[in-house]
Length: 290
Ligand SMILES: NC(=O)c1ccc[n+]([C@@H]2O[C@H](COP(=O)([O-])OP(=O)(O)OC[C@H]3O[C@@H](n4cnc5c(N)ncnc54)[C@H](O)[C@@H]3O)[C@@H](O)[C@H]2O)c1
Image (cartoon, rainbow, N blue to C red):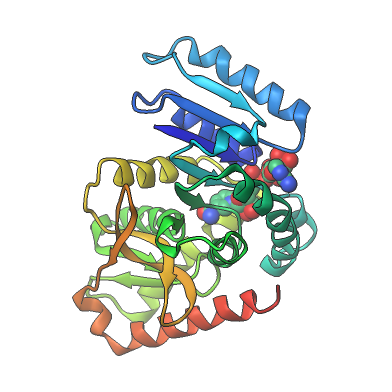
């Protein structure tokens, strides 16, 4: 499998570190506008790769002509420092939408036609913006969405001595995310669990000024689901043609991309339906600011 990563910041470099030892990966194409940083990350990666069970990897730096042959592009450029001054996701959108306008023509020109796993925030909006700018088939774009938020919810469930498998986050990777919890809990108990996933990222960010260790294995998890075609539904952000928007919902993936969104009985609950609708509207409002 040939993997490309655009944006070798905290997230991209941690993803490269997480993926480089994988047996199935033969080639890794890395891209960043900061040449010296890219070179340094490459050297640091190689210094560990030599001890891996599968050290023979073809690693290519900043060569967009190589991108055309990649199977999967992991999209994570940005400028996380923006959030040190403004905690508003729209401030980040102003920067990441500009970066995406810069990078999209390079992706198009490379002839890349594989799957895109999009991470850059606001995740749902940027996944949709990539579709638009690249004029790309929607089923080939997968936002990492609420996989990470679901991990956070599941940790909260474990901490409260509940069954972790009973919860999932859907909707926006952001403030309006919806916690679907299949346990007999009161609204305030559910809200407390939801707040752990909704604000979990911020509590890490406020101290570290970035997050990376949660998203990198989440990307590996998505990648494995694609490559091994596990058929297990993951809460990734994918396109809904009726809504004309990307948002997270349990989705089955394959090497061709999105196979189908999967309905589940709890979604018949009107309150979840209503919350999801609000979440979709928020993504749309954010999208409309571009
Ligand atoms: N979806 C999620 O669950 C999730 C989790 C964590 C972080 N994120 C997001 O991921 C993004 C990256 O976060 P980070 O901490 O790595 O940021 P960062 O600022 O550390 O790194 C971003 C990198 O992108 C590079 N870059 C910027 N413009 C570029 C361009 N035109 N071409 C190539 N490279 C370019 C920068 O040089 C930098 O190295 C942010 O939007 C962040 O909010 C998403």
